[in-house]
Amino acid sequence: MAEIIKILIVEDQVILRESMENFLNSQKDMRVAGVTGSAGKAPELCKELLPDLVLMDVLTEDECSGFAATVQIRQELPDIKIVMITALPEITFIAAAKKAGAHSFVYKNMDSEYLLFAIRSTMKGQGVYPGPPANRPFKVTFTDTEIAVIRLICQGKTHTEITGILAMSDSSIRRIITDILNKTGFDSIMKFAVYAVANGFIVPNI
Image 1 (cartoon, one colour):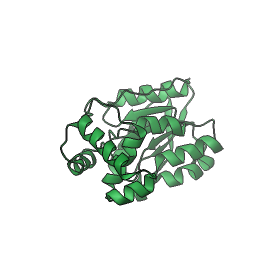
Image 2 (tube, rainbow, N blue to C red; image 1 turned 45 degrees about the vertical axis):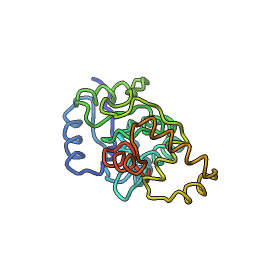
Image 3 (cartoon, rainbow, N blue to C red; image 1 turned 90 degrees about the vertical axis):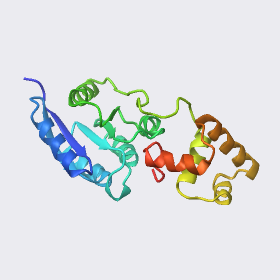
């Protein structure tokens, strides 16, 4: 008989969480050891339940960061595997998941069989990371500085505040904004900011 994979689900959408729990419990080689709607509670639950694997949402209730929880779990309980999940095609999430130490990354719009594949592959030591989502609107790559500027604009920061936060000159910020507009085809950085947040390509407070 195959060894049972004990799973902790970290997901703040109740219907989705319950659906995932029922689906995973229906598998002969999986058992949901616990669930929570807050990434902030995940590290302590891991110590209590000792799951083999955590399905970790990127952003949960009370704006708790799945990335921060992943870093803590990987430091304190390095044997636990972590599969990060999200519905948002945020342009930095894949890189951030890798940096946090997540073993795999899955978009929620993938079918259930793919989720099972990711879980089983991860438990075998084979990380699963997709390319950028197909509905990503720009076939371009932003620099870390450009992303920082975009995120601050999406947070509603003024031009003066951005120069202070990033410790850059006014002319440098203006040049970066021009580069962003040239890459995206927008004629206004505010129009781009509204579009990016509305479509989930930038999550301002992550």
